[in-house]
Amino acid sequence: MASYYMEFRFGMGPQEDRVGFESHLDDVADAFADIPDVDGDVGADLDAGRVDVCVTVNADSRADAIAKALAAARTAIHTAGGHTPGWDGMLGKLLDNDDFALTSAPSDWAGRAVSC
Image 1 (cartoon, rainbow, N blue to C red):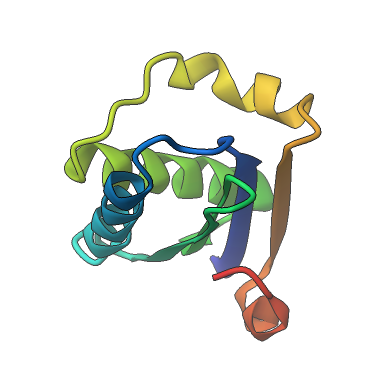
Image 2: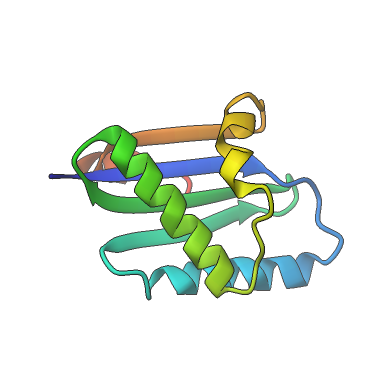
């Protein structure tokens, strides 16, 4: 089993309740601390409406790491009181969206990351 570092970057657009959105992202970041075997964080550029979710997980393969990281992100969002309607079909849509990027690498590369 290897350790993988994942970054999910996606556009949310400008938020009307900027303070509330920032508070929610703080809650999501805090929720990662309660997920076993996951190290996660959230960053954002509120002016650009961009959110970065950074997660380190242990997995047998890159595909398993992506699945674990996405599950951890969804759990953190739910724990923070957020909702994820349409999540199950979301990854395919995001991968086709210019406002989304996925970076994955062995976790010893995490120091090269610039987002979280």
